[in-house]
Image (cartoon, rainbow, N blue to C red; front, side, top):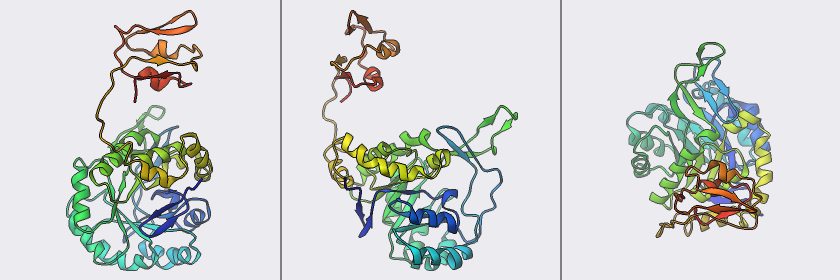
Length: 358
């Protein structure tokens, strides 16, 4: 199976890399990702001065990371004079340098970071205005690809994309952490971490997929990096089919450990085979004729059952209309009561139900 991606005259051995965050803070973390099987490396968001981050700043559940993190805690001089020269010398894969936040910061930072970057990722998490001016200030100081990272709190996200592209950006990273929110710590009778936190991980995957899908439909030819909720090989295939060219993962590795990157990449060929794909590039080409193609007709069919049915009764128990029941050795459908919702088909563990969902 061919996992490679060719994008903007750069070769990526596979589409998965880390996302900017604590897991790529500092030299040793950057070296880890330079040497593991990821297709590219990413530096934690570099601003002129290091962030002062309240501690503790990260908490996790089985499917969600809560954080009140900021950008890199290291001063930009540490990155520019100590870390990036070493990573550049040892580099085995493309390097994306994340940076932020204000126009004057970029005029200072980009010329100093440019010798080490294959691509730039620009965080807009705390940007409230002058988006066009920020992009122009970056473009004046580099001819490298510029990817603007979209925060999910931006309502007019398609307008965001148009604005940054018109100002000179190359592509989009979608999405950043979701929030702000609040989590309650019952055990300690307090808020968890802080009054305002951000959430990421598998719980936000549908939102991230939605942004990627809608951006790809509106801007069919721009490069897109998908991020938000990836935790297994099939998630990567979903993001690529929805419109991403590359993907980033952070929170699932915080939940399960950084060896998850290698495991997912190892699982990718099997996932491709299971769903009838021969390569990542095939999915990128195929999506124009499949998921991105307008839907001409919506069926309104009740569920049908094939020989895979094991009479596990899941469909009968969960049917919101109580339209399914067991009759001897088969499941029968009351077509008058069935509301054609598709829940039964989506929950069947053996793919025994068909006809409702396309």
